[in-house]
Length: 340
Image (cartoon, rainbow, N blue to C red; front, top):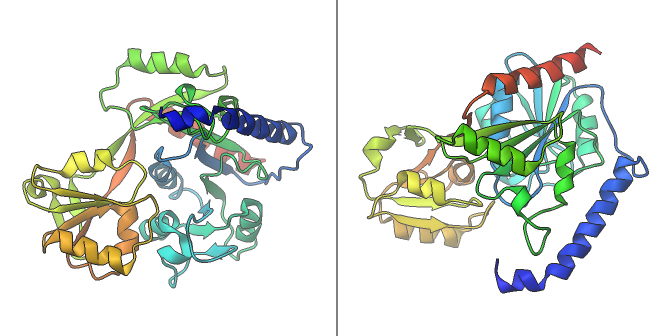
């Protein structure tokens, strides 16, 4: 922890006090939360930064969308539109934000919406001619004005909330006690070979209550990269010189999966909107070679002048074990809610 964060500790205490009072008022019903009759699943975290929400939402979409009419609702971080927007054929990453646009591109059989006011967003979705049967709230763990029927809390293996502090000393948006709202806690970005013993150590450290379940996942990279009209095996591309490009919170694993000693890695801030100057810089550094980026960055760059050189690497969230138990818990919640 750097010295500035240590010096800001009094502000972390104050911020923790304010968020705790806010949560207390919601818990006691003094501040109003709106609940809905259909299944609403909120996915989020206690900390800022990348914990793998997008691949977790995509896992839920794959689990549910063959059986139910699914909608995702996100804030649409850094989008250039306002209010409620339901994705359609005119949508792009600037209108929806990069992650919702990625959902829309990958899963044409679901509804994708954005609204900073999640309560209004749900009301708008339920007023559509085709009403969703399940709504997935992306990054809405602290959005207490909606009372979701089920909460999934994510925490990264290398940055557990139990080891963190409140902002600005640490990265927590609210105190660790906020984890009590979760029905499921998913420890993300684990090593693939994480032992049962280490899983138990983490389980004890997080101090779950008896009703909570915990699961462990890792980021599973595809064995191929994809361009506008081409698919190339990762094994074939690793030995090539290339430019690796990422505008995500924690790009190191992405770089490590693809790079060789001759590659250049170029990093931009998370959710970065690429300017013409950025595109010129990327093109100059690529020197005519392939540019490989993340799937989230690709949706912002696929219509740019880089497209002839541009490829992306898909990822997904994979459970180390007990994925059938996770699936069963989610499906049971959805089935029971729809039956009442």
